[in-house]
Length: 382
Image (cartoon, rainbow, N blue to C red; front, side, top):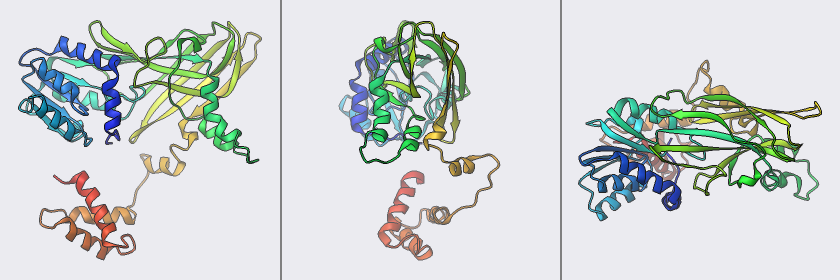
């Protein structure tokens, strides 16, 4: 899946000095004169340029986004165009003529459990990293803690409870609370010491699916609104950063997994959460099951999943099942025939004319057909 970043998004990543300074320091440790470097997800090319400046003989910079055109210009403007080969594609579709001494990447989202990060890194590690080569980052440790977050929780629920229209929108409120998003928390909002959910060692990891249970003992009285999840990045020896509340804010933010209701807590209460991330097609389904055991013996339980947020409707899930026997709809049949016409002999305009003739109900104008033909050409043509 092509990342949907725009130039502003890449600019925000470049302006995050916590992130970029750590990556620069890690590259300085790893890159030697004559090194071959692979930059997976190069964006506008900053890390590839740094590798050249450090003496890399050759840099292969892979990026599916059109921002790679800006990276090419940056290479020209910095005098490195002859040493960087830019490849606009997904890394899993690329073959390199040589293996890399250093592979650097940042395919994370708010969390490193983001499609297709883990699968892509495992793939390039096996196919493109030279024996004894260096991966940057080396590992990410994902940690979590319960938080007191009335403002953040209200931002999720208030659109459905405070609209003043006299309508019952409780189903939408529940769906919203079965999704998670990016926020920034302060250390003072934590209600217990952070616990580790997962360690992603990129030198060995292969399975993109993660599941573990965490337990916390509440350290102060307060109200729990959910759990914050973040990661600590280990890029190289002595080089890293955290996206959590103990450090400065970063472009990544932290993930907020809200509870269905705020829960009053006192010191000594215990919280247990099973957190699971399971890859389905080109995204993840998240599940978080929470049990709060109070000192008085009472319990509060929440069972939550992004499946209940409408992110994966049941029909969509059925169509992704291993036992589903698919049949192409009209759009699929049209796309198949359009792709069949892309044999190097017909122009896009000619293909659009033929597509409209064959599928008049689908393409009500030549312009509509040309738009679809152009999209398929951009994605699949050589």
